[in-house]
Image 1: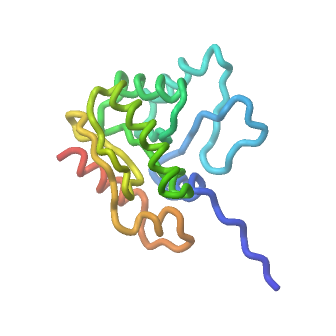
Image 2: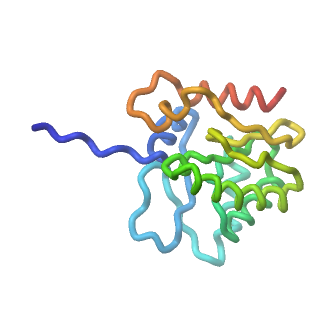
Image 3: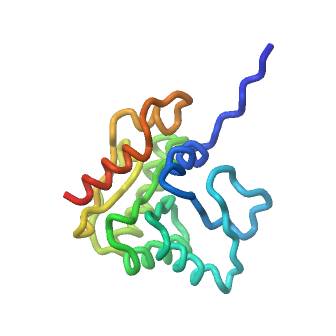
Length: 175
């Protein structure tokens, strides 16, 4: 009997597709004992993380923020809109795909309220099948619900190329 390789996490699958555009880095949680597999992780002290994240945002070709809810997340959201042009910011809901639809919608509700409070615009009430939220040049939010993304991002076999899909998303944002 052969053993099956362990399934890759959503982050590992996403990073494997994004790395063709350049190195994928993330800021790790200071108290995590083992880093998550996927992006290259930086770890910062509590008194320096905001300064370091700002520097990383300024250097990045694209900033992908994993949607969530915390004080740190709110700071990242507020900082991103101050530092970045809209076409360089993307919110990812990929990690929510493992949740059932009720849990996913509850997490989205919290995220939606944060976005509305920080960015001052309204988001749709339902997340539906969105995997990403990106912005047009005027900061109008758009959701990427491209058919086949679930299979592509979470499935083992994929014919799509993430860099091509991201180009499509970013081209849509520029229109």
